Length: 314
Ligand code: G3P
Ligand code: CA
Image 1 (tube, helix red, strand yellow):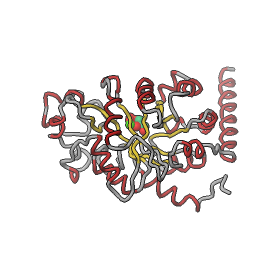
Image 2 (cartoon, rainbow, N blue to C red):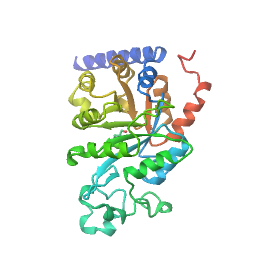
Image 3 (cartoon, rainbow, N blue to C red):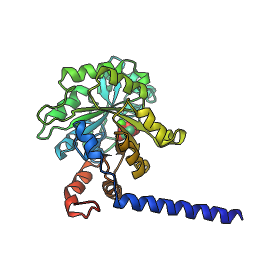
Image 4 (tube, rainbow, N blue to C red):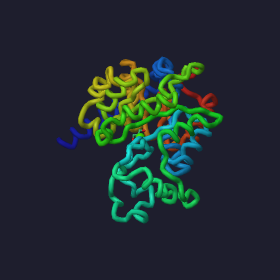
């Protein structure tokens, strides 16, 4: 009896999934473009996650230069603060995975980034772990990232994440001050392009950015374990008035989730989208954008898309 019930539930669930999947394939939600355009964000948005991080060591100048020269819309970067107050681009809490800290500071190999001064970090090699061709790559500052973004033929914007922001009180003010100084707080008048976007898993951090720079678009990041704690509807509620969009794990970016977000005027950027099948599926579902380690793959797919029979193509 129990087995029959289980089979029944599975069949019912599969039928529902099939129904909703088919519905959204033939009738995708089209509001993403309108929502992004209003905020000066290109559609669909191609965001290089830690640079072109499949081709060069993540968060280094090389990875960002490659992504910039591919013509992405935004460079994504995680921001943290050194012991002596420099804002640097780095993802992990500790340095072990992507540097030779064990060699240079063996006693401190498990210490957090924020316990190192900028000069100490400059002594580390952030390239060799990836490939010896990149030996000697140094950590970069927010100012250096800005220089990269504005120094090429293409001029991508920046999508900046305050990483573990609760450990760095006041980091939002410092980031905004640097961006203001460099002229990165206003949208590009000619292109009406939102040069900067802030995003964070921390609602407190987004609230601060809202107070400091309400004109800059904000994105609330959500992981799969956050979804298991709270329903999608609840996350939409939490984002209401706080953020302009949500960043979700790729496999959670169900088209009906996207449609609900759009109803509320929020866009959705799925991360981290690195496989062609994911890109194709999300394109069919009219994804607002793609946060990817492989921007070349996303860009070449989007370039070819007019030749691909999109179901809603007119
Ligand atoms: O792109 C979203 C992403 O940046 C959040 O995750 O861990 O790569 O910073 P993470
Ligand atoms: Ca990030």
